[in-house]
Image (cartoon, rainbow, N blue to C red):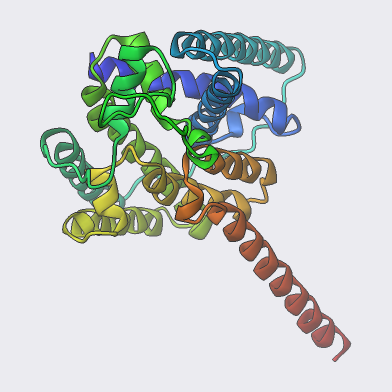
Length: 334
């Protein structure tokens, strides 16, 4: 059942993401859009919908069951809209064929096959570490306890998950804004799985998968003409993840041991995807990354990292283009 949930958590975002990309970038053919973009964009949309349902339930004082209904309703509407958009785009493509923006590359050589096999082995080791490792870094974390309190009491952030008693003074708003526990609770309610299975297994597997997609997009931007260098880059990422497994604070440690945390998802998924989107000048995707971060990270943990990263890269790119333009002008005049 866990793997079926993981499959749904990939296929549904793929549908949502492809539909959203078709609307956001209508001048670009859908078939030329990377599959990775579809999954990651849909993932950001799901987080946004969970955040909207969560805030509605918290601000209006509704129950957790109301939150589940709001989330499921918005998800169903968006999925139906995405399917309609894709069908409309397919009909438009048949009536007026468009030129594809992707081309087949040269045949895969032996080095590329070796790099792919090495990456596959390293990825399987990571996946086995997440699924079978049985070790989670839980110091100071109460995600599972919070999800259990939602499911048992049918209230959101009104019961202390450690004591089981009502909060007397309430919770700070900066904590109430976080939607990941309610999203995980939604998944538990819809799938029938226990919170430990969703939070400690299914979600980290999805985080690991989306992280690889984000870095794959980044590899394509850094080395657009060399599949061999792209494969080498992905092997380095996988190797650093495995080596960081024993180093607290490293990205690999977070993905292997606490892939359900917002700060881990930001470091492993949102930041590399933000960098890839900036390099491709897909600013609408950057906005989605910034909004998703606001839904899952505490203010005490550096909220706004995606925004600062995007602004810094955009400023660096602007300065670089100006310097190139001046140097090109001087060479032309000479």
